[in-house]
Length: 182
View 1 (cartoon, rainbow, N blue to C red):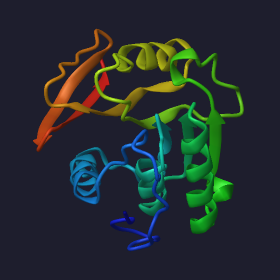
View 2: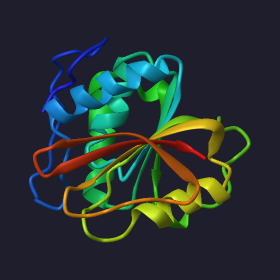
View 3: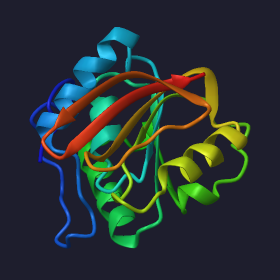
View 4: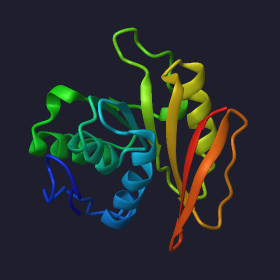
């Protein structure tokens, strides 16, 4: 797995040995970032990579000139790999890692900027998207114009009353949705 464009283009990322973490493929990430161009993202954006795993979405955003990224995951292996990837790309100063269940987030600390762009790629079939979005919204982690990139299995359906669907694409068994606050 590698960064597909920007400052860290073609740099390899550490990947998990176990099957518990399912990183977004290069092809899917490239397609997602092509869709985000319509929103002038991720340039200068404050990003959250929820269920971050290896950190591939957030690191891709930093490579493409995002201002900051907050990586959130509760898995020990995921947090260790994400830290390793952040260090390997030397982007520690733009990165914050939170080892916590994103569905249990509390209010955003005042020092943290509100997110312009949020990636949510949870384990499929576990119904984690709505609780994660609810936690992010109730904790004031979002701005009025936050763009959400939601990844889920093709067989799963997902809607949220606080978000409107902007775009939807299928890539094999993967469904990508671009959504914004209603």
